Image 1 (spheres, helix red, strand yellow):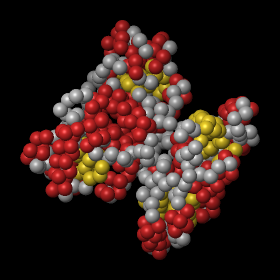
Image 2: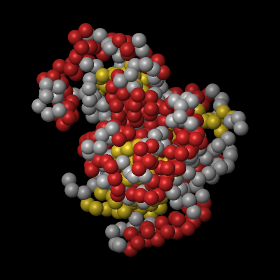
Image 3: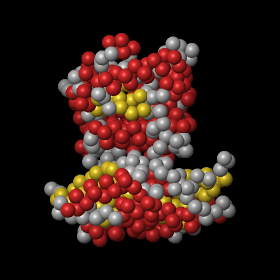
Image 4: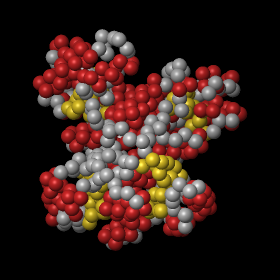
Length: 276
Length: 276
């Protein structure tokens, strides 16, 4: 289906714009037939910047492709007021929810600009960076030295999605995620690699459809035994057998996004985010 | 300031819950004095699961620590209706915004569950994974082979924040971000490393306060020349001088989060996200 080019959408924020964009995106994906032209406008932390942004929105409005849609996460009321004067359809996230939440909690909010993705909480921030360093140092079984410090250790055949999942867990949630590949030698012995067998409660498996694995490996090493469909079928079958025998929880990454894999694993292992 | 333990907050979603959590978190950070107990409840994609969730919320409500707060991103109206019967203060994201957006756009939304962080768009997904692999392969100047394929190449002294920023750009936005350290040899020559000098338009610098760099490096290699405050001062001074001479845009990562660094550099270099 060819999409018809629809509205221009602005995500306007006093911080990074990541929250505004994510909220807006979750709404826009509900309108499948329309292709939106999306513009992030971060760091609008003064009335002057807001006015420049209103100008820019006005130009788009005058171009004749329909009234622009503006999603905002703006805390300061003056800045918010300025944006509301734009020639646009404005959906203001804080306006809709902050007031009701203040009433419910019985306290006034602090109206602090750009809190959501700032580095103000130094400890939280260091935690994330350390988790990233940990994941990098413990990628692909490179080092088993500190598996005892891991929150989770992912196992699975080569190219089943372990590395991106570990990095996402570290960056997004501050979780120390290591990973260790399951390789043909493990299948011959039908035993887990020794380094991870000691940490059974932290293990989580990723599997993948052999056809998909074949595609992924073929891009890396075309026409190899490693990438052949036959070998992919064998490895995946053996890995699933091994995980079943050892009683390791696992999921198939084939049709899941990194976010879905990470969220499912955290739920299954009852790991919470480490960042607040 | 010691925080007083406040409400329990549930983030209830038919998908990963990441959008609901981000929305809720951006609002809750506006109430600094209160510590919230936060629970993510993902994958509520049936009325039965919704009812189990309502039970769980009810238990918390009866525990006497105040009415729970519930943030929801639920597309299905039956499931949403079930959650609204919970003994809680419910802030319903789609209810508030989807209707107005439908009126504005003049079309009905598709009401598809769990679109926001799903892997349904295979091409987008592969793009992200490839960007992660690219960033890992081009971390710390390991390989300069494909710098021409990079969207951005970060430069800066060791431990200035290049690696986490690259990984975040790849995971969040599908951007191919390489990085290359600036080392004492580069300062002696007062020239950029040859491998990156060819790609000037893609370069972006990270600097950092020498005191902060000293702390970070000391954790890694205590009492080394590398970590000494004197050497950190020297390296940072030389790196900033070099970047200024070469006309490279740069920022200081000292008080910035990964999200803020990523957003600023995307704005400065006019790089958009590659994931939709």
